[in-house]
Image (cartoon, rainbow over all chains, first blue to last red; front, side, top):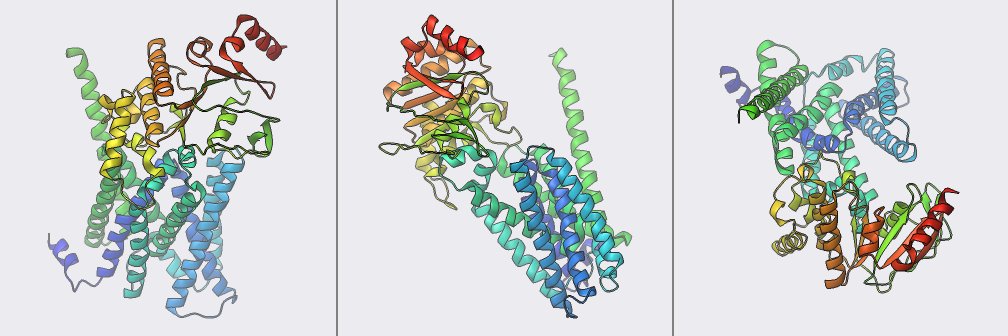
Length: 295
Length: 224
């Protein structure tokens, strides 16, 4: 309780970090529901990795003197640009390949993931400027968040959340039954593009703030927990967001208490919740099955 | 007209005219291009050559193969039927009470109101089909396009679905175009048959097309 009081105090030194954690806990699961519904879970793994490769590439441009020395603010903009361009390019290429060629989509996504991971390391190793900050990001350290970074993250996530809620009807229709949507004269390509743009923006902002591991964790684990508990699509989205926010807050408090990195603590906590929910459901089903012969 | 995928024509030289208010069966062997033709008429696939026109303009109601819809979505039957009104309700606008009421009526007409609150993925094949037909009606369709609506469904349910479609065809003057493999059902309910064979269409009234000797001829040509 003492830790919670301290964390919630307006004078708390790391208050921006916890605000960013809560924003990610709220918005990533909302976006992640579409990755789960469209069976793009592997994409949810690969995109944050590709996004961090984009950040590493942006920092490498600086090291290679392709771009001049930048102030902190401009450096962040450069990193965001790299992250967003890599994420959207990967989404575009993988989606086009999936539509044009029947082959194994998982193989392409897996290859993209491995290559992005390898290139991130190679770019980091050869970068004397960005290595320290980037390694912190990859580990999921959420410590130094400036007021400007917080405002930018809040604005970007606010736009994503508002558009996802506003166009929920359209996004669900083109995801569930694109053929029906076409017969209703909906522009399926345009709606898909907008949805992927929002996914790309969320992944980029999140990776820039908390790294690929935490982004992946919040994109997928809360929706998977919600899918197991929800009885409707509204519940699916709401439970995912609640699980995300609670895990982000509890994870932050535990990490602060134990003096360990916040990101991995959040993801580990999500894993524990997922195991508890899945275990309870399995036990429930088992008890129901055993009850049938006696009925 | 030519239809197909990725610039590869499955059917070419297609010249087909469907009269309003008719009940037409689209028959042919697996992989002959029936579904491709149906999707082209529905506007899901763009024709590779030529064009499709409706005189006067028609509102289409497409009923896909029910197993095509992913059970991972937690939609109730009502919510699935409600999607039919999305063509009339603009982006970012909420679906109003009148549209919801209309969807309830469509579910009633198809005999699906009793399980409207149940999860769509947990319904039987026949129940799902009724919901998908209700969804097409909710779109205020005057032209129903159905892709194998009775595949894998038992005889009694098949009969009730075909009776429902015939009633909609007669009472609401709905044009029905249906891909089907069930010759007996087609003989009983359809008025016109289009047979897809060797990349071409053969068509005519049901009595002529589904005569024993004609079927033998069509099948013989197909397998020769």
